[in-house]
Image 1: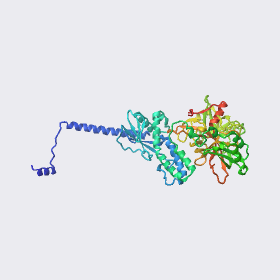
Image 2 (image 1 turned 45 degrees about the vertical axis):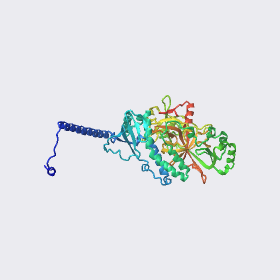
Image 3 (image 1 turned 120 degrees about the vertical axis):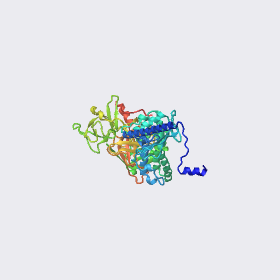
Length: 572
């Protein structure tokens, strides 16, 4: 057969020669079994994923890519909310720095994508649409898992071993459940380090945006805007230790004696009727508030004479102002005092009389006390009342057993302890929380240990959660006599407190990735400064007077009331 004829025959349908092997049938049979096994395994995986989704555990998208709610990263949510609030208030100053898409809705709920590599090789992805792949945070976490690997962070990924991978997977499976407790998964040092590393990576887009804004703000020369921006940029994960002395008093004189108002200056100003208040400001100013500036003609001259060394470190400023020290009356609930007539056993109800339960404390005998202000509940009107639930009527919850005297000469102590009636103790939620967690560890800190750039927060019965910054660490009011442990807080978005918020606990969040510790520094007393200067150099708007709680609890301790919060630990 010629070559042409042979090709023509193949085109017309003749069969090619086929060489058979003796084990062809065995190979075909093995191939069929392998295909059946693979199909069954895929079917089992899909059934497992369906069962997980029905149980609320469908956060894992594939074997290589996981999705979880961003509630697994509380510090990310905290920084995000503060940044959104900043963008909302200063949008006109941002210039060409357009906010990230993820920063446009402060009530947004995001999912976080985690890519997992086993032994350096990305597993084969399977498409499993379960809704979690939508609204994903812009930064993706990349992890490498090796059997004997130790925790390590590289430019490309977070390295962990298989045990850590399993704990992380369990946390992802649980984190959308209502009673999710994050500490259960990230309590040991290795997992805590992994969580902190992940949080730092996820926060990169926000810090990148803030750094761009900072460059634009420097050109504007706005000091207040720049200060708040610096506060945001400092919100990075740190180890749970006290801030350095340098950071605490960066804008204060280095010598501690010069960080306090000298006694001769305090005595002089307290005797002046025209002086309504004075204090040390965060920016290095010593501010004196007077009711009429024309009466204070010689005030500046005399102060500079008697405090010449002190004013080498502090800038003296005198402002005409009026102090409106209106005492504002589970953590954050309303509390009502009893009427002046004890025989009536009735509460005084109204915005001018109610206050806030700052929190609950207990003594060594397991007695439980509600902590609030002494001008809300005191020994003169001992009985205290509250709602046990949202829609329940007001009823008696206990009696005041300790009360500081706000106007007593020699000291200022605006706290009181209301001992809860025994049959109601089970209705008290003892744990303290912040905006993102209901059950936090607590430390009670001296104000001097708090960084000047820390955001402060409170939860009140009237205004709920608010955020502010410390305006003055030491402030003296001439309408309340004696040594002051008051400090001033300025609200970041409107007022820090309103009537009915008295008694709210003022705290700082410890900057760890779990956001599981609050550093309690004070209690809201109330009041505000009414500016009278036509060209004010200092902004007194949205100010609130707060009382240093560390000092108040020490006074209670000397009166045989040694109390502490639930989950309280020693400060660093």
